[in-house]
Length: 618
Ligand code: AGP
Image (cartoon, rainbow, N blue to C red; front, side):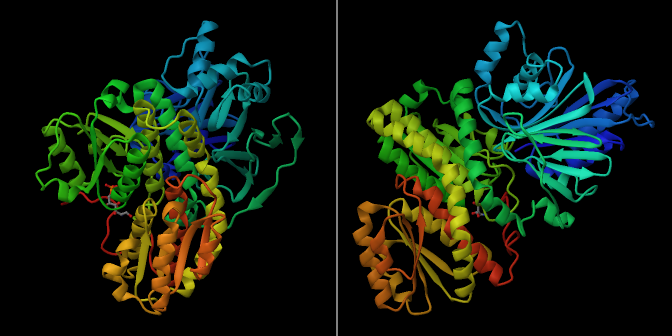
């Protein structure tokens, strides 16, 4: 997810930047760099790997005649820094940030993705401006230089009009050596206000050690920072007084961006995880046909097998419905630990999709190796750049959820599901199984998911808390769903048992009468995911049966589904969209319900007992 920081003031900027990058490490990165001005020139040091590598590179730079060890601090001392998580181009020093324009006078750090960077690159090439890296960030640096006419803020503003995507940028230039300019568009960027100094970063945690006074920027506002000056103007250039607040956070809370736990923070980051994953999918579609999945290869696929464990397995179940319903290609989904010992029938023509957020799950890796040995094409779907899964496969599809600290998967799940949906729609385009108009409608509904996730998070958090607290001591929960509601029910039940230790079970609702109904009574709530209209009457009958046993019913349903209100004690309503896409929205109330219930039981939701984030043993 990258982290960016900028500083202007009287401290030694290199030190401030480096310490700030340390505080941004939790966001995940694979290279890092800093640029700063000292002794009248701009120095830039970048390194592949972690911040220790950057530290060594800075030391080497100083020994090689750089000014890294200078004791006299330039006034003001100014610089920018970045932890990069590769999106455009491989993980190399050349692609690491900060990036400069061709003259080397303009430097920027960028978090996010510039979706139209290819056409911008072509436009620059037409002006005989060649880029020296593969990144979208360098294109922005070149663009700002091209638009510069004596005022950096104006150059940034003019450049914004040409950018499509979501991003936060901090820029500096030799012509205005005391000035930083920042802007955000759907990516975080906050300003820290100190005495005779200013900070700007992706997260308050980067500068909380120096100041607690913070100004939050709105989308497309341009901020100009000098040691003793802070100016904010809107996209049209109209200046206004920025509101600032004093935050009262400790260090730990800071890493959580103000949330009480990582899990809650990550639930709130789901819209971003989905937006980034879709952006990356689109970008990689152009560059490398989505991890090497050429049309030719996909056309040769006659069967797909999905393997994964836990939450990743549930994402696979949702993906199966989409691929089968939209592309009409048969899909099997199996837990990796069973698949590897089952002597599965696979070979050329089978596409194996191995889903693993960590990329290190032993059972999933073993399943991948087995599938490759039998001649299947194996694609890894992972969130972890450089993980083992990315090496044991024929191609990689990346989710872009950012690092997930909570042991219970949340944002990685929704990112996995949307990535499978994007793949399903691509397959549907190739098989021509869907009318073009339907395909286009689903594509645009997919793009609307981030906005809708945010709507659901804000509308269901309070009722989920109220219900979680009320039902915190129930001895057992039965989760039911049908069709695409089933993986949501299964994932919701897993979340609750993982973090609250309350026994749960999840069933296809039609199976309820074949056994689990025996468990039901007044103390055993039923959680029903009723987002598929085609089976709604059947689900309502199941709920009648549950209520006849005295069970309290919580339902998740689409807006406008009035009848469910007669069968449930509480309904979480979701914005209406395609029933398959509802998986990504429907899981949100169940995550929040599990979260608040576990908190009501005073449990450590980030590190539940007996569980590890990465399961590298069988
Ligand atoms: C999810 O909340 C769990 N922590 C667990 O089920 C997890 O999904 C499973 O261990 C698979 O992990 P992976 O995605 O890293 O392979």
